[in-house]
Length: 404
Image (tube, rainbow, N blue to C red; front, side, top):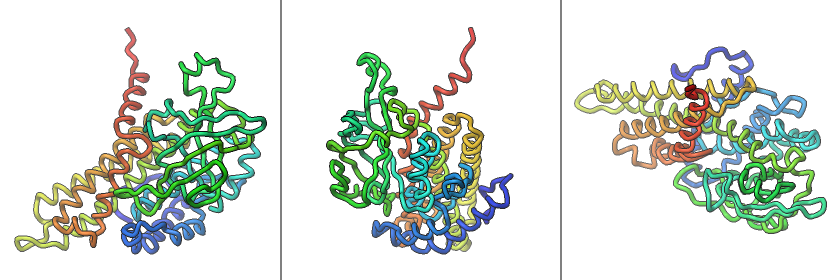
């Protein structure tokens, strides 16, 4: 274990889980990650290995076949996995957001139907809010669900769906407007949104009547994991697949899931930054200039000092956000701060490691080249840095309201 990013107060079980995951990362992910990433190849064997370890059921309650672990345990595992290859942590994150939403908001029937198979990794989840014409402005979605007898007919286009092709269950946010006067629906759009649990076959093309998953979106980084659109054209979904059994609760359900997702993105930033630091500090001790290792030059030592401090600070904020959510408290402020800081620091640590590598950092033969293309995704995933700052600012004004 490295000196940096240690977590105090863990149980013996948590330490065993983390040691197992780290060993898996070192032996099964790091040796193949760069090659798979360059081929943009889905890491099937890695995913099967994580299924065998029980990672897909990490936070799912024991009564449904999971391990019943905390968000903190999950976040620390994500940190380790992202240290190996960030794309693998993305495959797990979307799955867990859906599992978390089901556990927190699903009906008894929905939990019993989905969670045991999700814990085993047989059903893999994805969730979908964003649309082509909007990013973080969730209240402006246009996808609609219209009641048709005992079903709903869904129509609309979704964007940036992680696991869009490989998933078999998608939580989709649509506008329903059921029971709301038009004026109220327009004034309070968040009250007219509903989360639908859409089951589908993995793959691309028309995966069920009314539902099409076009091919993968080509990306600068974050390869291996499939990112897609989702097109609904009269997609028929039974009313019992409304998450929680009630319409109009989708916005709150999704925001609850996104808080978990933001802790996850913070953990990813911590993991990628740790790996970048490892690569930078190792290379600095091997590379010689002017008759000595570059690590002995003060300029490089300053970089390493800044990098190590940022890794430590980001890890501490991520752990704090996860622990607060585990207590059942609202953690949007802490999750926003952790996601913002960890993603920004990750970008900076990766760039410093890239600079330490000099010209070799630009070569695809060196792992830092992959990290340099992966880090920017964290600046926009689960809400941009600017959105995080809006959330943080509003929450701070709530907490420090001027009494005059």
